[in-house]
Length: 343
Image 1 (cartoon, one colour):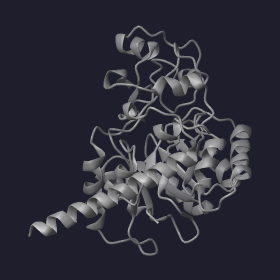
Image 2: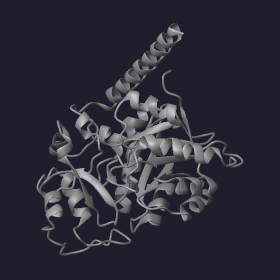
Image 3: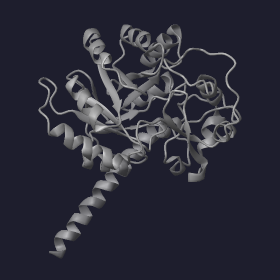
């Protein structure tokens, strides 16, 4: 086996250390999450923006589509979302395996997790928040770098963050009953070679979003997926999200209007965020993207979108990652043999 299983606790173990990033609004839903879980990874339903019935239906559908118990089903919810606590209650009630949360940091989430008996996985971008997460009882922490898509908490590269956070956490005593905290590298990971490099830097797994957006099972409009193919660095821009964080997205008519400060302010508000600048309606923009509206849609992307040229089935994505990882290992061994021959 090329990849080592990813352990969250004694009962929750994913056979493959691959987490599919949560992509809202309604980008990563049940069909994609179940397909990832069926390959042994962690499939994620992005809960932000979903009403109660829709979220319950999506979790139940994912469970019905999950035929392989080697993987897990999680939800991702932004701390910035107004319905943050309600979403967690619904997910727990539906028996979700994991709750992943980012776009802000909640200490209370860990208490809720313990009270409800559900595993909590925070997304952090700094040594400080990683250390706090460990003290609060996190067994797995997603470390999101400046190369990630969507809302960003740092501009630091993943190859800097992982070793820095690994060193900081290892310098402190382990939490009784949890042991060494596992780190998940998120941002900039596109291949099996990247996965193995992250492992060598101290990660136990990776989170990938854009790669799984460009999958057959992701049920967004084909315009959405096709927009990502054959991109260059000039096609990717940074914007300021109404959430109050910088974000990375594709250059489109909407992001161009944002850059030029010529975008119209929303006429109505859904109150979907705890705090919003009301610069533009992010819910409308993300929903437009899902529906394939290139003119008005906001298309979040990772920094390495230019590396993707194909839309693949999820199983083939996993197969390729493992093949690339195996090739990486073989090349490393060959290089070591050459070096030993020199001496």
